[in-house]
Structure formats: structure tokens, C-alpha cells
Picture 1 (cartoon, helix red, strand yellow):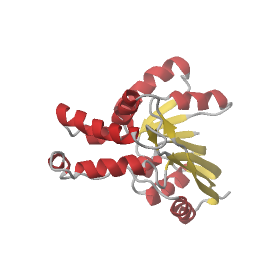
Picture 2 (cartoon, one colour):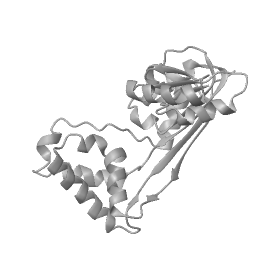
Picture 3 (spheres, helix red, strand yellow):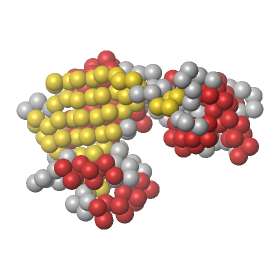
Picture 4 (cartoon, helix red, strand yellow):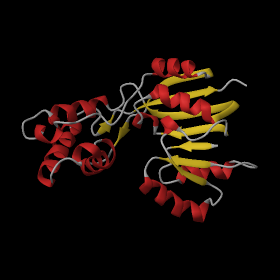
Length: 224
């Protein structure tokens, strides 16, 4: 089994604990993440192999019975290449199971961030900005999977709003997860102002301090 976007390796280790008589490989394009995963997996799931690579250009041909991915596909812009790469890595009859951000995922938060980026005090830091994420809708994802050769395709969007108890918790989370590439461009003073604006706006929402997460659930099979 292949885990695309294995990150810290925690989920990959859980997968390995449930796979008997076979092997598990974790793949990530971040050397730092793989180093973290290697250290943890060495102690908790030593059978897991790790590979540095990109989900849209996997270095495997007919290797896996199943491919899994969680919270990774939205970091890959070319989903056509992604699904062609995955189906090539699967054995005949092999399955893909994945979940990522999709559809209107974080539209409220990212819309606010986009407006802030255009304000004169922040705009100079975002002159060459390109969006790091791509949130596909279910219909487009299903079409691309079928075009790549998958059958028994299922694709659906699921609302998953996530609320925080305090403004400080919301601010810390979005700074480290949702807008980390935005704030990485800003000096400390402007970074604090950017995050403060997002947090104050979210505190006025109903319900307050809530991220509008949407999950795209995907499954399909390579024909036998």
C-alpha cells in the first residue's frame, strides 16, 4: 500500500499496523517531513518504507494493491497528471482511496486573506503570489479519474466546519496551517496585523471562530 503525502508518518504507521502480509510505503515531497517520519516510524512501524517524490509523477509501475492519501491532493495543481500517475502505480484491480480539501474549502477565510493581500500595506509582499492550493469540485475530480482510466469512481463533497474556543487558538491554527504561506512572506509586525484582521473578522461570524472546511472524498479502481 502507498500513502501519498505521508507527512509525519503517524497515519502511515496506523496503516502498516492494519496491513498483514504486505508492505507499506510512505511518499512525501518534503525532505524535512520524511526525516521526521523516518525517526518516528523507526520506533513504531519499522516495516514502512519512505520515498521522496511527487504524487503527480510517482516512480512506480504496477506496484501497489492500494493507494491512500489524506489532506494532500489539494497541494497538487495538476490533477490530471496526479490520477494518471496513481493508476500507473496501481496493480490491475488496485484501489485508490483519498480525502483532501475540495470545492468551496476555506472560501471565507481565503477570501478575506485575498482582500487583505490587495491592501496597500500588504500588497508589496504579494506581487508574485500564486495560490499554493487547488480545490477541485467533485464532478471535475470524477471526470479526471475516469479520463485516467479509473472505474467504479465515487467523488463527493462533505462539509466539515471546525470551530475554536478562543481567538488565540484560531489565530495559531490558521497561522500554522491555513495561511502559513501568506504569513511567511510578511515581516513580524505586518504578520501580526494580517492575522489579527483575520481573527477579528472570524470572531464576528455565526458561529464564531469557525473554519469552513469542505472535504473531497475520492475512490476508484484500476480495471483488472
